[in-house]
Image (tube, rainbow, N blue to C red):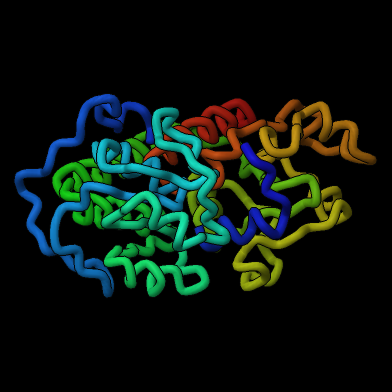
Length: 305
């Protein structure tokens, strides 16, 4: 995974499935017989089922393939690394080049933000742009599954995906043993101590496990809910659990955390409750959020013993 340095990662999170949910991604996408076009999503009207889609959002890319629309996707941005068969390119989502995108002759472009007037530029070539903004809640994520299903001619699949993802997450959380006492946690986005508050998408997911977030109490509006904590703040809070969402990008591990000055005194370090996570799962709101929830469940169960 390309390194997402602190502020870039915050931007991606603020702007910006489980395998059992996905249809056979190698199979050709079949139009949903219940789909009706034209469809209007927000301010965008899509006249007919798109045959050539460019995705400039890793979350959208994963969702499109989970819906069975993978055969319609002709190009994805440089950060869209899942599923493996997605048509990976050097297209940038942060600095999109309308000319480079138009070179793939898309009839629909899906992106997380209308950066630098992208939609207006593409409109000149007759291409529709569907902006799927960052999901602030799980319900927002489910709604995006529905919208992408409607936009691509897979309405029934979108409804099924949203329903199944919601059910799977609810079941995992309900089955997670509750710790004997409330556990506090520190969620690390990178080694400069950017974290998440409970006002964020990830923070709300974590709150469902009954955990106490040491990043709360800071200004929730700071960096959109992604504050930069200090080492002193973390050490004073002495979290029971540390979640590392910077393992692939930054090589962080329980060992590197324990080697930080003073961090060997943390309860999480002493009790072996520093848990590495998959950076990509922890930074996207695709159907694979179920995989992240399962990983957190296993870690909470371990820490609660």
